[in-house]
Image 1 (tube, rainbow, N blue to C red):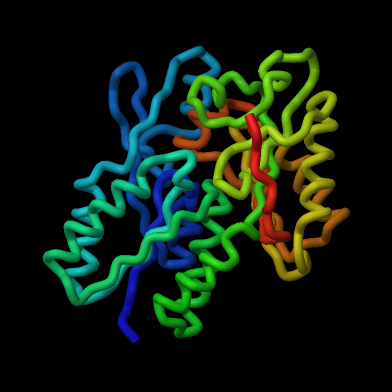
Image 2 (cartoon, rainbow, N blue to C red; image 1 turned 90 degrees about the vertical axis):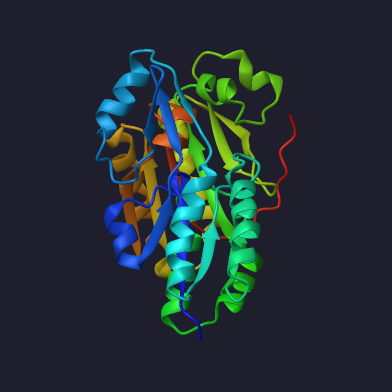
Length: 296
C-alpha cells in the first residue's frame, strides 16, 4: 500500500488541533482586507476570530481568493518527491473554483510524476462537512484502506454530510453571490431568519424560514434531530461566527435532545465567515442523504 497525504483547503475550517489529530494538511486561500492580501490561515495566527469579525462589524469589506496554483504545486511537490500520493477534498465546486485550480495542478504535476496518484474529491459541501469527509478519509487510511477505495467510499457517501445554518442577515451571502433563494428571502422581512442547507448540487440554499433568532436556533436542533443517523456514534460540529452564546445554546439542546457521541463547538473560519457574516451559526453531521436541489 502506497502512503498518501490528505489535503483540505481554507474553507474546511479544520483548525490546528483537528488537523494534527487526524494528520491532515491544507492549501490556503487568501482574504483581502483594505486592499491587503492576507493568508486565510486555519491557525488564526495572523488575526484572531474576534479581530476578523470585528472588521466585518465595522463595515470593512472582505473579499476572498482561490487557492493559488503555486500553492498546490509547492505543497503537492513535497509529497510526490517523497514517493507518496495525494488526496485533496476541496470546497464545493458550486461555491469555489479552487477545485479546478487543483485539477490543473494535478495535470501539471502528473506529467513530472507519472507514477504517482493525485485524487481530488468535489464534496459538494464546505466548512465542517468538508472536514468530516477528511476525518472519515483519515480514519479509513488508519484502517489500512487503499486510496482508491477511500475515494470510492467518500464519493458514495458525500451527500450524507448535512448542513443546517442560519445567519443574522442574508446581505453578506447575497453580496458574495453564494446563495440560492427565492425573492421572498431577499425582502428582509422583519424578524424572519433563513434556514440554509447545502443542497444536492453543493449550493447554499435558503430552504426554510423561522420567525426570530431563537426559533431559528431551535429549528436547527430539530432539523439535526430529524436527519442525523446513528447519533450515538456521531460527532456534531456546531460552528459560529463570533456568537458563542448561540453556539452554546445549540450544543445544550443537541446534547439533551439528540444525545450524539460528541458535540464540538468551533469558529467559522475566514473564508466562509467572510461570505456569511457575523452571527452565523450552523450544525454539521453525518445523516440522511441530501436530495433537495435549491431553486432561485
